[in-house]
Image (cartoon, rainbow, N blue to C red; front, side, top):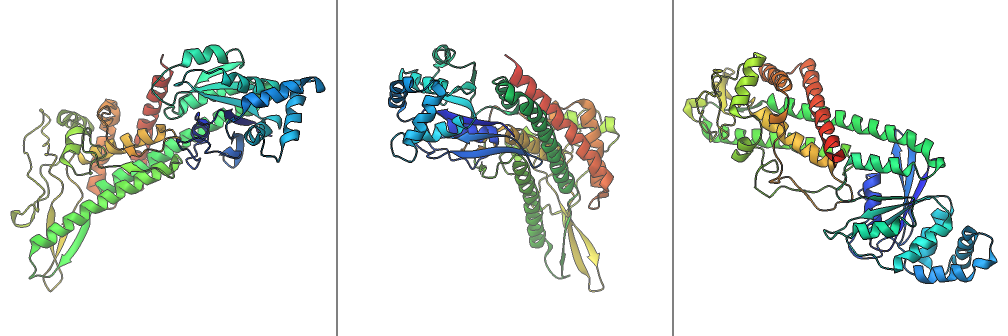
Length: 476
């Protein structure tokens, strides 16, 4: 039977937030007002159809001092403290008196381990000793979690008190912890009791493997996005007598909208992988580094992707040619795409295009009637796949690390975030550059082996980022 842990504590101290984060379930109700949880609710952690362990979200203590008084008054009627608590439940079950205390003590007396949650941003009050004493009387293994809900810090005062009642005391910010911190907490929970060790020894590697599976599936999604967008071509047929320019403008808008949809679909897929079913994105802020901006905003190309010199080095080393110019627009009309800079970046002989240079429309003659086919794509800016990849990696790193207790929208923009692809190893960038060039060359029909190569490279990048996250989280 898988272990059960009851998350208990005073009202409005972050119990539901901890349940939401540990179970990766954003359906857990979290509100600022007290008394959101009125009845116990089980949240199993399931991997491959197997329940590894369960958490029980419980109502908060409401009358702990009075409940402890009752227990002390009846202490001599029963041989053990645990039996006194059981008598308390039997005496008040089904009545309005001590309803919250009966609710939260129910799963504990049924064998659940205890995770006692306090708010480390508020000072300790003597009333909490009654709660701790009641939990001690149950005789169940117990750990205290200091959850810091605001910026104020009373953690050390709390720790002194908690150390007297709990065998393990940990700080755990339910709104900011990542996966490594969750695993460390589980390793602490396994030390609470011998009965928890074997099940959690199985659960921890299963969760790590599931995390790896999600990361590699995200690599597949991101590689599919970059490959699909970098090889995307759109066509439209117009009659011989029709003016080209308005049709070209419309085709270009459709082209860019289609690429935006590809990016949004990939983002939703990644969010789904990490069980963020209710995640909202705030994409209205237009500040650096712009990964929340529109895909084709000029600033996206300024801040993300590779720098001109990096593009040249990666392209030259990979033996891939960064083209000698964008597709010429019909009659010299660019339909608002901007101009080629024409300047060479470094000594590699590859042209680096301005961020405003997106994609141009070209025409072909078709049929006996002299109809013309307008064609746009694939995107020829050599930095385009890098910008798209950078945005995808930034989105993945934020979503994968985001605690499920958070209910604020994801701000897809932050001044303290930087692009990722410029930090990748030279070997990885060279390999990606070569694949990008091959994808554009084969557009729109990209061979499966190219997609497989790109997926493996993106997987390597995500694995590297995951290791960096673990190193940062484990540093003092």
